[in-house]
Length: 488
Ligand SMILES: [Zn+2]
Image (cartoon, rainbow, N blue to C red; front, side):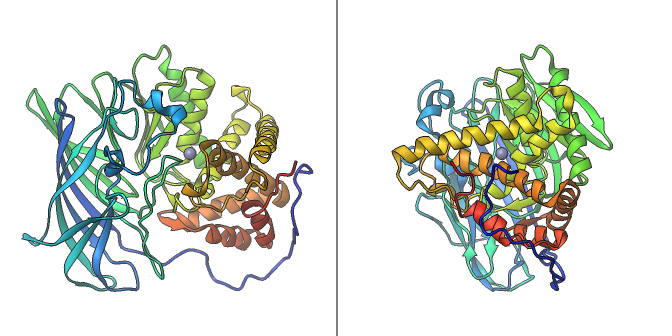
C-alpha cells in the first residue's frame, strides 16, 4: 500500500540454506488437577500433580510456577484493570482473591517450596534430586483458591464464575535465559506457557452448567453434587466457567463441535453462526483445528473477550451485535495464534495480537454478508492510528511507536492497544500487499504448520516468513516493529 513507507525495504531472493525454522520435538508435561468448588464461600480446594518434563539442555535443582491468582490480592503491586474499566470490573466495589499453597510433595514426602517474585507471583519448588534433561519429576501441590467478586478472568460475577489462570502453571524455561517469571500486568494477556496434557476433575453443585477446555470424559451426579472428569491433550492452558444460567446451542464444523453458551440472548443462533463461520474460515486459511470442540462462552468479563484453549470468554457487557460478532471472531482466531502457535505474550504481544487482529479482518473479507469491507477496516485503522500518534506526540514529544516492547513498557492502555493490535494488523496487511496474496497465504499456513504446539519468538516468525516466501523481510519487520512506519 502506498500509504506506508517501508524503511530500507530490500527484496532479495536467497537460497536459505537453513533446514527449518521450528524447534526440536518435545515431550509434554502432564497436569492432573482435582478441584472442589464451594460456591457459598467462593473458594476452591485443589490438589494438583504435575509430571514435569525437563525439555531444556540444563539440569534443574528447582522448578518455577506462576501464581497468577496472587495478582488479585489486596496488597498486589499491580492494579488488575485500568481506571477506565474499574466500574465495569467491580460493580460491587473492590474485592480480592488469592492462591494459598498448603504443601508441596514428591513421592509422598513433603519438599521445600518458596513463594517468591516481586509480587508473590512465583512458586519455587526445590527438587529432592537434580532433574537432568529429558527426565521428568512428579510434584504434588495442594492449594486453595479464593475468588474475588470481579468481572475478570479469575473471579465470580452476577452470571458466571470464571476459573482462568487459576492454578500453578510451570514457567517456560528458555535455554540461556532460565525460567521466564514476568509479573502479571493489567495490559493485555501477560501469559506464556508450554503445551501440556491435562486431566482435571471438578466437583461442583449441579445447579451449575460447565464450559471448559478439553472434553468431559465421564461424570457422576448424586442429584446435588456433580463431579466431571475432563481430558485435554496438547493444550497450553486449562480454563473453565460455571453458570446457573447457561443455555447451550451447538453445530458441527467437520468433526468439531462448536458450542455457544449464553444467557439473555434474543437470537443466540446469530452468534453461533458467526462462530461456525469463523472456524470454517480459519481452518481454510491457516490449517486444521486439531481438537474436537470449541466453546464460545458469554461471561462476566470487563475487557471484550479472552482466549483460552478450546474456550473463549465473550463479555456480556458488549451490547452492539457488530461488536459482539467482532470479538467472537477475534477470540476464535486466537485458537490458532496463541492456542496452537504460542508466544511470549508479555514480551512481544504483537506476535499473536497483531496477527489475530489481521485474521479478524480476513474473516470479514471472506464473509461479505457481514457488510464490513476489509479495505474499510484497514482505512479506518490507518486513520485512527495516525490520529492517535498525532495526539500522543503532542502530549509526549518523541513518542515511542515501536511494537517490540514488553507489556509493562507501554505507558497507557490505548498505547498498548494501538501499537500492538492496530499497528500489528496494519503490518500484516502491508506484508500481504508486499508479498502478494498467494505467497502471503502460503506463508501463514507454513508458519502455522511449523510452530503449532510450540512457542515462537518474534525472530522465528520473521525467519519463517522469509524462508517460505524466499524474500528477505528483515528490514520490513524491523522498520514496523522497532520504527515509526505509519507516518503522519
Ligand atoms: Zn486478542
